[in-house]
Length: 230
Image (tube, rainbow, N blue to C red):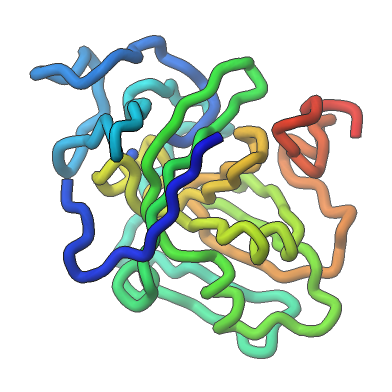
């Protein structure tokens, strides 16, 4: 999988993929959005440096409780658990107060299809570093506005510059795709790509099982392995 990574400067590209269900729209950009298309805050980028991208509208909604419409005025992103200093961020403190990065990353669904998207966001490791992980912290548990949970090893997040995204294909994440924040869990199956993130908890519980993991999906979520029977 080709991944492009770059720190964005003041002249950031100004021109979104979450979930795990295909709607079958596909194809390149058109003059008019397809029927029932998600409303976007701008024009969606469909190519990046010669690489064709999937679309926001290539995905159907299949989350556990339907799209979550987060009130951004009262929203806070919490970083807590085994940390020196628990943190709470407003949306703007995350998006404007931290360096922004972009990556082309492919999401692979356990249903057997894949879509590639240009993601923009902050490095999750930067937020964790600010809270100061305590000795022994080795697992990061994520919680979402709809009650969904999942977890990943802290080392995986630090070694792979994992993004917490707020834009996709050059537009702000729509509610249907995880606004305000979507985890870009590259090289992991789609059930690890948690949407509507509200809490990032540092833990030493390597056996923690999230929503789908507690229902039989593998805890590692590694894309090069079966999603069952870990």
